[in-house]
Image 1 (tube, one colour):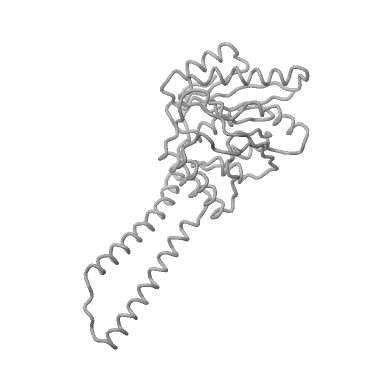
Image 2 (cartoon, rainbow, N blue to C red):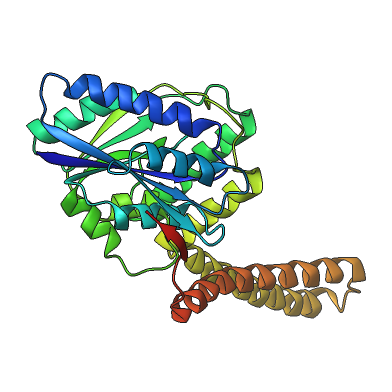
Length: 313
């Protein structure tokens, strides 16, 4: 009998967890009722929650010690670290990744399971067909991010793709074995390849609580994805430097020609100040791009663990 592991990163999800567990249990039990083809286990990862998320996980584990497990971090390390910890802990033949807020509809799980069992797909992933209910600006920025990263990166990410997916053990092993500390899962899922089928679903509202992602965090996360999977920003900095150099040479040639033909014209200081500020800003921009990549190298060379586990059951 094959085992399905369900990995669920959790951060302040005390209200969502009972609802999530109840719905997934009902769906999988009904699906398996006449088949008895598989068993399933849960791996919840408490990412330093400040509410009663850990107490909820302890309660679920006590009620079902063989089926419900959890990893408790020593502090908040971020969703990427929680996702990695869950994938490492999962032992199933198939591994699903889901959010606890039920924005990833569990009703798709039976279809995903059947597709992996009956076809040669390695991954059944999901994507949203719309972003109804989200703020207009966030929706537009998200669309712009997918457009930019697919334009500048060799790794293509499906627009609207979610982390919600069901993977074979071979795919999970490939993802876990990647040695990098700074991880961008959407990119890693695409980078490892494997035969993938995407299922589409409509936007789902959170079942409880509020989103933990601020606009600033989403922008930082997007920049991390661009830096992790593209060297184009470095090339842009080089192009800007080269363009500035050529423009300066042409400007000097024009000044010499004008002086020879029309005499030494008086240069205005406002234009000089504007040029100096423009070139200074351009240099700082290029240094900032370079610093972003150097910072990534610095973090990787530390070889610090992505997370620390306080308790695991």
